[in-house]
Length: 636
Image 1: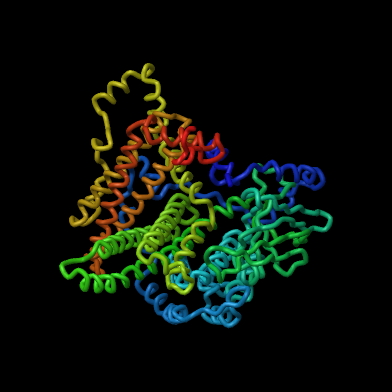
Image 2: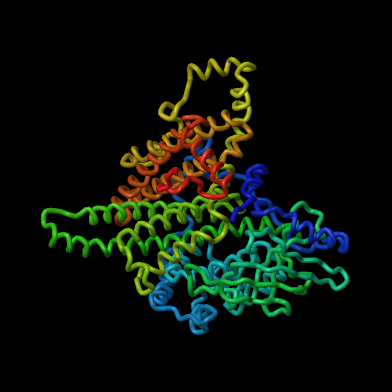
């Protein structure tokens, strides 16, 4: 199943308007509607709460592409005082105890008994302001509590979906909408979920759902079907994305709040998924559903912006759930070591077996990955709390893709040791591995998100070095630059060091800081080389962009680990010396990966591996299948 939008996307370089297939189908269905209804922009421009554009103030990651780091960024975000943190942990003791016990489910999701317990504990209102009956948690507090819920992954997904709607209404709803919905959402009397994805048998479809405004009735008429809707059967408020054909704006995607009990709303049967089996995920269809004029969130055409900003929180909450799954796998590996080594002592008294050594190696790598994920997660959440309305898109994209990749890697590594028994439903890790696979599919496609990370960095660095790159691509017109480059040539191993990271960390972290700085300088040189080589055609070189994306992801993981460990040692936190070792492992492993990726870029566009990829892929596509004949084939 080919997502053709990938190729269109790379040409337009607009990842936030991504819809995986052409919108010609939607245009064909709505051209007639545009002639039949009045323009809605004038009707709602003064009624809805307009969105505020994000502040394009790069925080951390984009600056890596131009080798810049502010000294204040070397301090791990401190958004909670000790008293506030102690209060949250004390409050969460009862919640943690509750989640240690089993959760009851019925055929449509969590049972009424569990739902009532959640209402009593105030779980539904974590990120709802106190004035509307919620807890008023900031992002860091919400993520901290999400870790507890992640122990029951199906519940964690339900609460994640609910909080995204709370976030959207609080940020973009009118005063009337906030007063109408937020108190009930906080108390649990209303359960909400987003309904934005669409799917057909042929492809992942564009947003074909429409909402047409009838000026005479002063109502919206909503039509369409949404797929993969979480907690569909138990939710009584849907946050639905739909196109408004009457809008004259380039992007008419809009967000609507839809009561699940309205005529025309139908919840389909539960999807049969590979994991998250207690999660009622299903299609929801809307057939001539009439909505009041105030059902729209913000204004027509603001849907893309709302989806984008609420996606920041979605990625962080998803990463918190991934983190809990990673910790579960790591703990299972640790618990396996002693029985394995006891068996080894009987069969091999002289030393440990290969299996034991391999298992210990996986425990080490998984511990380092967990530390990096946790460090990035709370650094990113802290940045969201410190810098209001700031574009933190790249940082949240990195933590989501990194945690997804590491979770999948750990799940597959675990299967090497537990072997056949893990395929049985009663095995304790069976659901964990199934859920790990399922968690790879939520939200934006991972490959697209990785491309976006690379493109965003290139765009930021390109704005800064455009003139220099342009001149270097025309050496005959600018011979002075050619001479300057000859006498001051930079390579992946020979560069000007100007970040002075060591001045901002303790002496015990000097080597870690050198590794991080070397990776950042290599990223700058590599991205600059690519721009000089390809110019504007760089955005069509997906493999190169993917390498930049992977590189900056490893750098952010190292950077967050370093800054966190430095803080822990300064504060003399328990096990700080162990954090020093974990940060060292993370920085060392990631530095080696960065070096390998950047050396690949330095070798130029004619690298044999890339040529082989292109040649083989072209032939397979041409033959529409794997083309070599069977190895036992003989000529007669």
